[in-house]
Amino acid sequence: MDIRSLIWLIIVVCIALVTSTCGKTVMETTPISIESPWVRSVSTTSTPGHSHEGQPAGEMADTQTTSMNSAAYMLIHNHSRQADTLLGVECDVAEAGELHLSQTENDITTMRMVTQIEVPAQGNIELKPGGFHIMLVNLKQNLNPGDTIILRLQFEKSGEVLVEADVRAPE
Ligand SMILES: [Cu+2]
Image 1: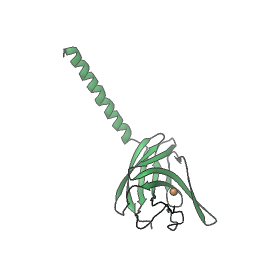
Image 2: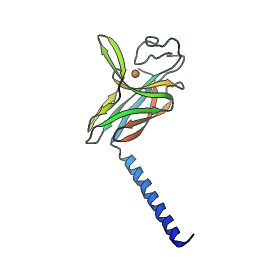
Image 3: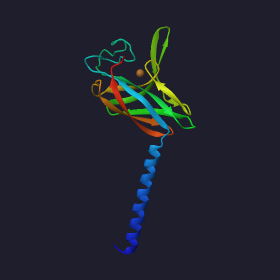
C-alpha cells in the first residue's frame, strides 16, 4: 500500500468515526421521554382468548383459538416545540403491536384500532386502561408479573424510542 492510499484510508476511518458519534448524539437528545411503562400480565392458564381491557375472559374470546393478547400502558412526554406522532410499535414477545383506543358509551366498552396517536408539542399523552393503549397481539409466551419486556416505539419525527416495560397484574 502506498502512502497516498494509506492517507485515504485514514480519512475514510475518521469520517466513519465522526458520523457514528453524531448518530449517537441524535439518539440521546430525542425529545420524547416515557414515564411508568407497564404491560398487563397474561398466561395461558389465566386469560385465554382475546379478552383484555378488563372485560371478563371469554367475552371477546375467539372460541377456536388459544391466542393471547396483552396491552401496554405508559405516559409519553414530548419536550419538543413540534407535535410528534406515534405510528407503530414492535415487540419481540408478540406477533404485532397495534395502536388501539377503548371507549365506553352507555356502559358498553368497545375498542378500535387507530393508525396513529398524536403527542402534542410540549405536552403528553397517557396510554391507560379504558383509553389509548398498545395492543400486543398473539403473544409468543406468557407474560408473568416481574418480567421486563422491550417495546420499540416508532415516532414520525423522533424515530425509534426503546422502552423497557415492567409486566404487572392489572389492579
Ligand atoms: Cu386493544
